[in-house]
Amino acid sequence: MPQIETIKKKSIRSPFFYVGDKYKLMPQLKELFPEEINTYYDVFCGGGSASININAKKIVMNDINKKIIQLHKHLQYASKDINSFISKMYDLIKYYGLSHSEKDVNKKIEKLKKIYAKTYFSKYNKQAYLRLRDDYNQDQTNINLLYLLLIYGFNHMIRFNRQEKFNLPVGNVDWNKNVTNAIKNYSSWYNNNEITITNGMDFENFIKSANLNCRDFLYFDPPYLITYSDYNKLWNEEEEKRLYSLLTQLDKKGIKWGLSNMLSHKGKYNNILFEWSRNYNEYKVESNYISRFDNSIKSNSIEIYVTNYNNQV
Ligand SMILES: C[S@@+](CC[C@H](N)C(=O)[O-])C[C@H]1O[C@@H](n2cnc3c(N)ncnc32)[C@H](O)[C@@H]1O
Image (cartoon, rainbow, N blue to C red; front, side, top):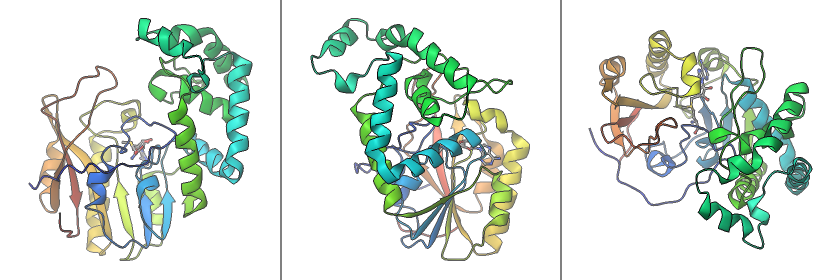
């Protein structure tokens, strides 16, 4: 299996800092994407790291998670006047009394962070964060609050309980200059491209509803069967097979697609992927997979990119 050369090009970071995002892998993957794309379909868009780094005439985004779709729509709408959105967020940070290291002119936070490296933000922000979380759970129409929860919450994740209440604990993170930069980059990307986003559909219904042709390109980054993330709760062997059967049908229709997935990880092996993918082109990707739950890089992980079209590496 050819290995993609490590490319030191920078990619743009999405302001959602999504678990399992493709931010670091995009320079490698883009080398394998078709050179000319009419409409690009980001079928499992998550935080949108792939979409934000793509060159295509049109971009269509989808994900089954309605909360991440709601956040994208909110930032897309706010992109009309992004400075006003950012200043509203600064006001909220002040209102709740959350730390704001971007504004740390006296380097006070930086010094404390060195002393309490692993706990500083979580200890400082805990009470303010819980007030913010309660307010959002009382009235979930205020999406600025949801975005703030994502920035200050554990590992920038989005998680709701069965009663549909946001239930993540505070994280050891805060609003720094990377957040503001990522928001500004997102808004200029949105303002300079033709982007549409669905209301949050299952991948199969999304593909069925799309008017596809051979100049389009579909990128699939589903939950990985053999790794763990909160969104993997939605995934199992049946889903995996349903996806591969759809990709096989698309191939027969001459529609170009690319799929990211994990072949082996932590002693587990994805046999369904192994059997199916050998009918197509497979590339080994230099993986950055880090489990959010044990923070160690798995040297035995094999992440692959599978395509049904040819591209020179
Ligand atoms: C690996 S993540 C995608 C990450 C994304 N590429 C990024 O860079 O942020 C997988 C996504 O698939 C979504 N998902 C799970 N089941 C789905 C389904 N049946 N249809 C559409 N999306 C689904 C999850 O909500 C999650 O956002």
